[in-house]
Length: 475
Image (cartoon, rainbow, N blue to C red):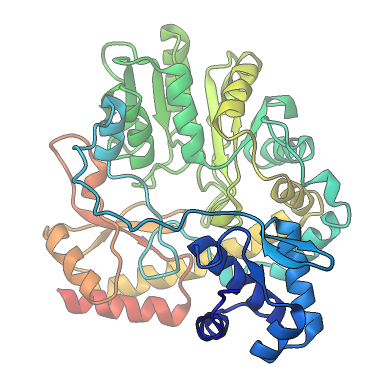
């Protein structure tokens, strides 16, 4: 027997396993894999191994039995314990040659060129679009989750690509009552995010080179989705009634945020909404209505959804729970005409299958039992007070530097910089611990207005005051 006691003890002592049996198993595996113990090698008896390592014989017997079950050892009564397999020792890793330049597809290059979409990982002034997770009803959510887990088999399997029926029904009822959306549960598709919905819309409804209209300025996530699909992007001019109808030409898809234009905050008028519906009918176009934060209105009730005015099935309605509940929930919803349900479900089935069953079930319970509406009522009051505080602080300390835009709702306040200096001040703010999401990159054309989107919803009173003080010092 050639097993040397010294390296055996050293290797055994270096193992990080929790139990002595596991440490001995790991030691012997390492010796077998390295070739120190070759195939056919006889190991010490359990009595001798126990004496060498100051272990109990029971521990050694348990380790030998475990390694025998794994195929590393074979035990013959009356003869002893032997190594059962031969493994090649790990080869020394050679230095890798310099790889060839990465060859991305044309679509891949377009996706990378957009810069991607990244959200802040934790609340920080003035990161935009984040709800306050510190006041979320965690106890209620925990209780509902525990109730669902009492029957885990119902929420731990594969799910319907269209979404959990209970959640689709709850969403359809909520949208009908709060937003005037006209739909059945069969028209609701539960997705992971609004960004996923936009990617699916771009892939299913847009061919390379087709004209897509986006608001100017507008949501960069929509721009990224349609550019990566090879669409030809055309900007829509804005006025105080919302996105203006283009003078000439047909667009296959038009992306709109009529309830609370992103990022200016303008609400689209009724007359403009009717004009857009007439345009869609005339040109056989699709209107994508992104109702991303209409739950949060402060001064007056928001106008009903554009989809509720649509008699011809030209509007695709999009919403998300990321801001109303919490971002890591990863649930959004898309309402489509009946003819589009099956194509979207088939596409979902080949993308990621379905959203998490457990989270869908808990969200459905949260809505059905009235917790969702109660949470929204509380958040509206809280966020309204924070918006008012931010407006007051800006007026007092930066009244001649920043100009607030429409602010009747939402989770962030857009301000413009009449004096310019957006890029320079944004860099300086980062050094001071402030995040200032820039306004100018949300324009695609040559004419751009400078400013920021100041998120306030996730910030408490002292945090808002301190952040505005830091911002004022930058000037």
